[in-house]
Amino acid sequence: MKKCLSSILLAVGTIVMAHALTYSAPNSDFVLIKGGSFTMGSPESEDWRSNDEMQHSVTIAPFYMARFEVTQKEWREITGKNPSNFSGKTIMPFCSHGGGRFGQSLTAIAKLAPKARLTEGLSVHYSGGNSLKKDVEKWLKKTGAR
Image (cartoon, rainbow, N blue to C red; front, side, top):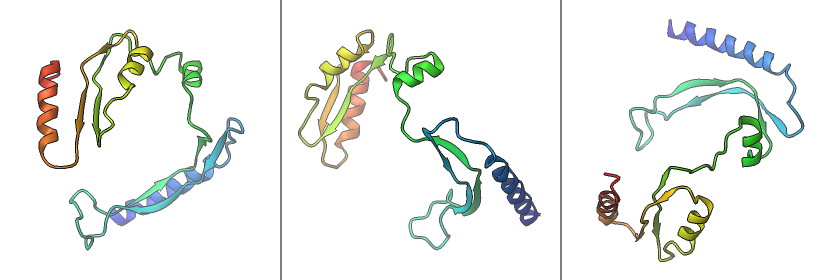
């Protein structure tokens, strides 16, 4: 039954892919990503394999993707929403570094999101070990996030 179902799904996927190839790109800023099938997951013999990595067949229909990432201006024009509107939101800066700390980041965040609540940030010098979790938990309690 499982093999029969896989064959049916593969046939349907092939039909969908053939149908998708008849569409044209919205404009020249889009490129066709060809569909296809592949095996996803890890073989049982692989070292460090988790139980949720079972191998299975995946078929992806062809689709168009923008040649470049969408700018915030384009997003606003298409959706009418501002992806950077942090008004009324809380920003909790966190930086795990090797010595650089926040630098001018907090000033820049405050300037770019003037209507957001900016909490005290946490900047920790981290080079491994178990101390980071304790530092973060303490900071979250201090800021009221926990």
